[in-house]
Image (spheres, one colour):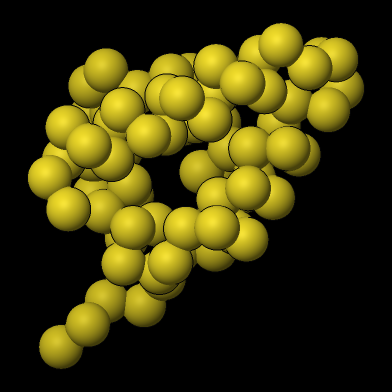
Length: 74
């Protein structure tokens, strides 16, 4: 998937959860990424974060620190 698409989708998730009570935001994003993003998409997200996280919501970057990194493919 194109990096811009990953950023767009991740930021949409963050925007939704930013409208939720503060104590539910982080857990909501983490749960959504675990439940609905396949390992390939999460791997791309981590690659973007490792490259500086340009244009990613701070909530997404924080949530990623609570996710298990998918294994790299050979």
